[in-house]
Image (cartoon, rainbow, N blue to C red):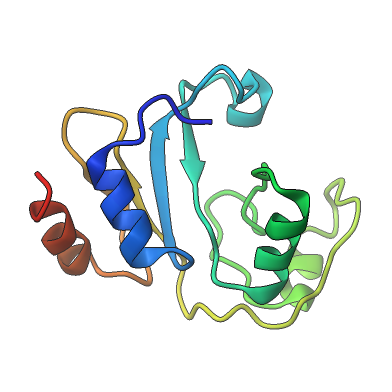
Length: 137
């Protein structure tokens, strides 16, 4: 689902997945344009939540999932908060698997270019990510 699984992506996935790290990589042809709003990149993550892990194991393929909040708003940590925030949207269903284990949003790192760039510092600090990346680059 990504064009180039780099050594940096491999190291970060081994150290921080499942967990609070989202990596942005160049997408392959397997990812439809409508999933990524026409972009040539895709964000990938394996969250550390037993329900999501079980769904991924059973389904056996990646899932295209949006964050459970409106763009620009803080991340939701409970099903009730998601329902309240997305009440007026076309939310088809909500699986409430309890409070999210993360206290903050995921950290997002863009690995689609020549140099890794931290887009958003979240639950994993930029310092820790940079130390990991420096071991490879």
